[in-house]
Length: 292
Ligand SMILES: *Cc1c(COP(=O)(O)O)cnc(C)c1O
Image (cartoon, rainbow, N blue to C red; front, side):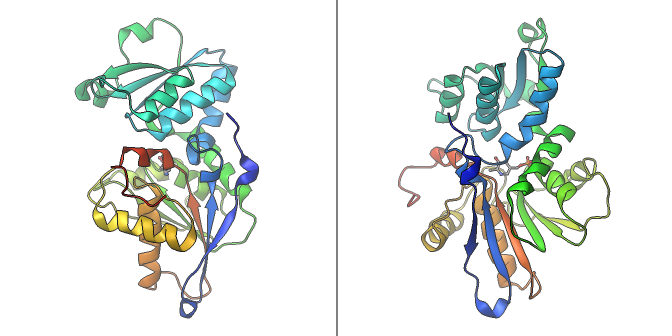
């Protein structure tokens, strides 16, 4: 497993000239076909702390298609930890490609029914040994600290940074890293995630940065999609050769395109869109829907 941080590029995306703005995409999806994007950054400082505390076993939570689960499995393998994934739902007859990949990195699974999963209760069998717990999606201060490192890979100046928002950890990290005057716009991929602003705010070092989360582009909710979104993904790929995933980055690119259409960003704006990876999740889509 090779992680190709030197493959990260900033790709310009064409925008109608009359808008007077520029748009580039920071391609964190190029780090690795499966372990791509922001999850890797978010895990780093948790694993460092686990090492300092001499913990051998990392436990975390996620669904059967979770980018976080597979990234945790890979990061643990590289760093010499045992990983345990507490997975939402009954054990399936056939593991998803995501779980198969994670298993290949040595992750052990424990399947929790939805009730137990929502309580985030760790089953007794895993409590007996010492372990280090990473929250679902890597939410927390150390996750935000890692996400702040993402901008080290951005070479060009920008006025606005746009990102997809799940737990809000990446957005908080980006906010902690941007300079005064640089705005951050987050696109929530969930429906009615009313606690999100508070979750982001609690990870900020100072609340003087300008930011906003837009909640209108969830396409029905987390991991939900509609034909319009799939059609957009194909069109966007056709125009830019940038692949997106239907859970996070497609909603982000769709939203930014729509916001540009509606003159949300003033002339002179230089947008940086963070492609946070996650392409492996497209494997859950029916074959043939995507042209890439
Ligand atoms: C997890 C994930 C996000 C959301 O990150 P948060 O820090 O949870 O908000 C965005 N994009 C992709 C591809 C992800 O896997």
